[in-house]
Image 1 (cartoon, rainbow, N blue to C red):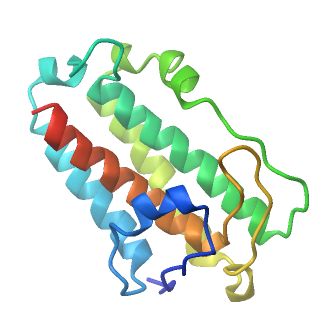
Image 2 (image 1 turned 120 degrees about the vertical axis):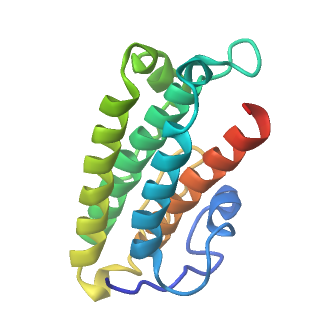
Length: 175
């Protein structure tokens, strides 16, 4: 798989540091995305079904909602990466993650359907980053709200680190 070097501070908004610092500095982000998915699937599928609908606090997301949130976020960040790679000059708008989770219907889905979708999105993400022109990886686009923009390569690291962040959160608060 292609190597994509880890972004430097300044290539992404400061809040993304939370995710990017969770990843190694070996350039193997695409392999990391593949491996993360497999580890996440194995970990979650070993949990009892009732745990997948548990809320650690009132009004907090269930594990199924967290998984669909990870998928939604990955789709959005891959789309942002595509736009920036293609040198889009229009500023991107943000998204309301709580509304997305509320309207996702995640709790009415089977875990298999969630992971089938997750796997499709992940394969698409890896395919996108595998085939972007080398000179597009350092392009930076414009964002709005808390998302002030990032380089294309920072988006790949955001996607992988965001997943790790939520899986670590599940391990701390849901088990």
